[in-house]
Image 1 (cartoon, rainbow, N blue to C red):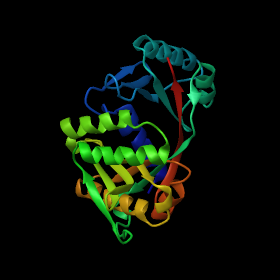
Image 2 (image 1 turned 180 degrees about the horizontal axis):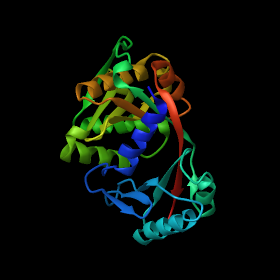
Image 3 (image 1 turned 120 degrees about the vertical axis):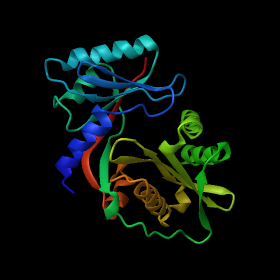
Image 4 (image 1 turned 30 degrees about the vertical axis):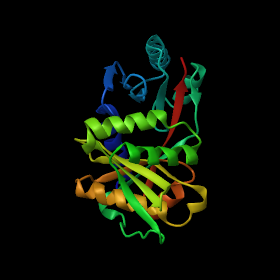
Length: 259
């Protein structure tokens, strides 16, 4: 994989030419910034791309803060290490945005990944197709990450109801207990499918469940003709992904503004 070329393709397809990530969201292009305004009440709002210089950056940041503040919206400036100017992160902090833990942008070619991964005895994968399945997925998310999954639950339900071809979610079950969950989101018109939300309950880690969910999602992506899988990987998942054949192309840091 030509990492420089793939990163440029990712920037163009997934950031510059991005489409709304679900029902009710809209993408706006204003000057050197591409932003998403999420669905009312639960959608994710963010600046996804910027083409700025040292001369234009501070004004563009102030304009986005003013815009989202006028809507009463929290938003995230999704900053990548290769974005310009080189001190963009410092400028975002100076403007009142708070950096959250950085994640590795990792990409793999679907055709190069092994999809042969066995689940432990007694564990089965269940497709999420209805409200009951979404509740199982959200339960794992809250227990693993310690965050409220209300917004996630509503967003997934919206997509399953209105745009089901753009998402597939899975839950690993130990009998009636969900122990791991993850989803894959498809971006029509691009070469990339995104892996999101992968998390395993502590006592089930190290048994190959997370890897099995990656393999299953790679199979789904291949069947739909996607060339690449993309992950914003935490420090916990990055080593697993690297062993499976993913390459780190950049580092992304969410800078969050609270109105």
